[in-house]
Image (tube, helix red, strand yellow):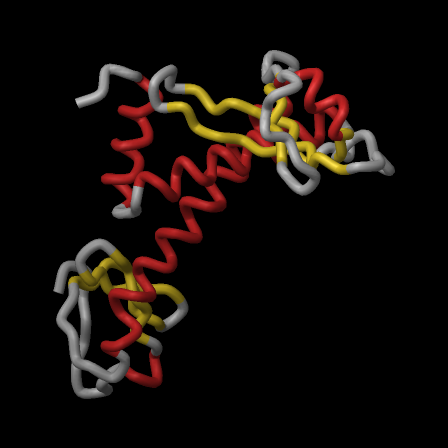
Amino acid sequence: MSTNPLLQTIDALAKEKGIDPHIVIEAMEEAVVTASRKVFKTNEALKAKFNPEIGQVELFAVKTIVDAVTDPDTEISVAEAREIYGEDAEVEAGYQIEFPKSTEALGRIAAQAAKQVIFQKVREAERENVYAEYHQRVGEVMSGLVKRFEQGDIIVELGRIEAILPRKEQSRAESYAQGD
């Protein structure tokens, strides 16, 4: 069991929603990249990685090593790369280098944007799980608990999801009550 509070939160969210923790981590990484693009307003190729040892998402600017630099935001020359890594380092054109970027500048608005991206990804993963669980059962008779009525349709609870029993699918000979 991890003592890191962020990892504990990720695990708890994944268990509660019935999704893989890696989906939550990917959503967090994507959220940090999205928020960073809004804050830094740069053309750099940004990449985020979750570091489980420190329990934080780290941000990197990715640059490709090229012979002649045409875009300094996304490219670095072979000579500059050799200066950084040393003359005897294996540095060739086509390799990619990750430069750490600070996430300290990301403020409240970026955190809100990140939160929205995470919730959206978690909802999508949840929806995919429900679809995978029930798409093969189309046309199958199932039993459920009547929860409520909406404009003649009945909302039925089927385990951890709710389904709609449309008015045209209901038997006219039967009447339904909440809790049936």
